[in-house]
Length: 132
Ligand SMILES: [Zn+2]
Image 1 (cartoon, helix red, strand yellow):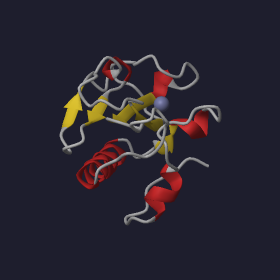
Image 2 (cartoon, protein in one colour):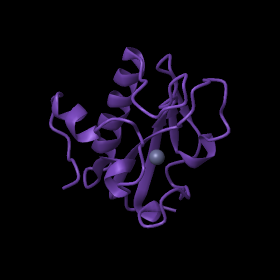
Image 3 (cartoon, protein in one colour):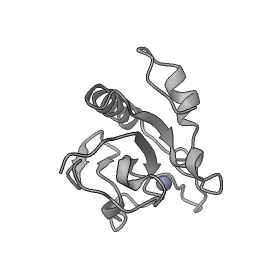
Image 4 (tube, protein in one colour):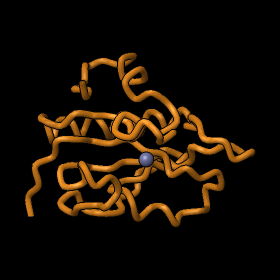
């Protein structure tokens, strides 16, 4: 089934131990700490994560988002950050009408992905379509 993608939502898996993978089911893609991108579900599938947007969303997460003491935050490695960025560029080329946002922009109570996607992407060229 072809879907109309309006949102590309960035998450963390909210895990500290990179071996813990039980949360992978909630995302289309997961970017590992070594920069490897795992495809978990086809883009044509609806992944249940945020009911308001799921039908029109691609969910992508980086592995991590939680530090040793259990606090949520930005734990991306440099190669992970680069791989995540490249994947977002590729997705926004494929879905030109889709806005990129962080989970925390859709749900203010969520400390996910642990950083501001807007602020992060502002540092890069080319300009990507960010949600309002
Ligand atoms: Zn999330």
